[in-house]
Image (tube, rainbow, N blue to C red; front, side, top):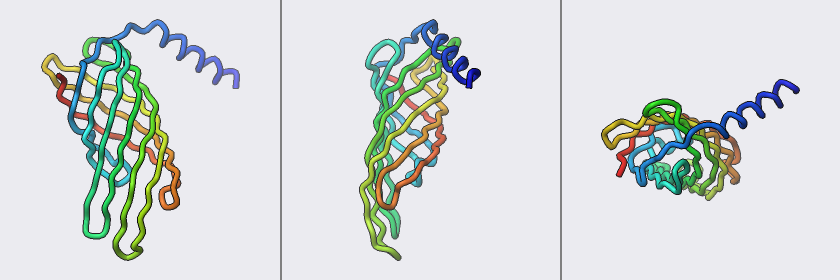
Length: 158
């Protein structure tokens, strides 16, 4: 337990001395991952300061027996590692809905909370690539569980 407490204080102490990274005002693109069955998401990032931003992701899927959407909002802090490499962490939540036609003919709207941690590379051209991990805890009748989503992000900055 002492090692855990010491590790937590060390990590947060180091975060206080990391230089802020100027991030682009806007970025739009795709977040390609599992996303609890929704697959690729349209992703938008908006800078709120020199080292924090808001990320909004929309995923939807339509099939022969399944329709659904998922909207996620995350507040993120961004720190520069070296050169164009940044790492980020954040928290947020969202809403989603499922509609099953056959064989169970059921639908549900659910809410979830999410965390987010990742690494990104900011190219000299207006392109940014990221790899992140987003754990989610959902609250609903059919979707009352946790999900661990890993995704690759490809975004155009402007």
